[in-house]
Image (cartoon, rainbow, N blue to C red; front, side, top):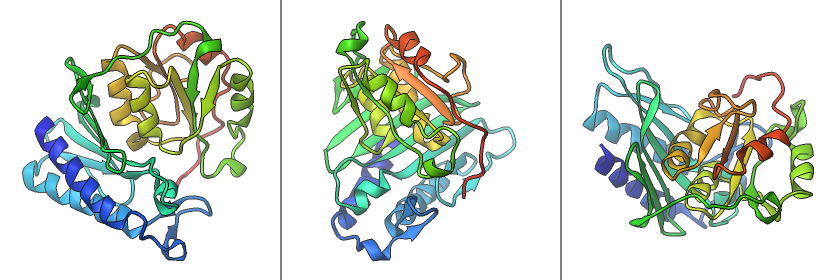
Length: 265
């Protein structure tokens, strides 16, 4: 299943790169005034869903755009897919985007593959076996001083409609950390925590496909993943903190959590 996940991630990357730099901004669709969807998102998702259905017809699929299929009775596996994380970047020909593929067994991640085709970076995580980036073993950083840390976050598409826009969290952490980054693809942000580029990441108002593969990588690379309360409710993405471990509690203590859950279109 790991080799299959790697293969289809590379296939997805080929589809993405054929359209990269070719998207007309006026041709994109909208799920909200900031929340873009392109024909490429849909094409990649359809390709991945077809390949999974052919190889593992009993498995469930939970993808961002359209494909939702429950596992067959007695089947424990589900694929959680973001066909194009960083769609806004992709539309603007910004290179920070990826495909994110996770395989869960009974709700727990067993395989995660994140492929950033423009950057030619392939992150692979497997439960109990660690994380690699282009074949090289990854570990989280050892930084224990927040003033020396580089952190990442993001902002919801509907931030103007939400009770917590994350801007106050950004302001608070910007005064304590060495630097903050907002690069626009949560799956890649999590992968960067796993390989030690970032010392921590938080975000609110995400979805399962944003975090499934990357969170597995952080844990397998020796880091820690929780919700903002320190618990295990991060799996739906609504609130997540991922770190190298030593900085986790200090980062978490400085964050204000999301408001009431809202329906996403």
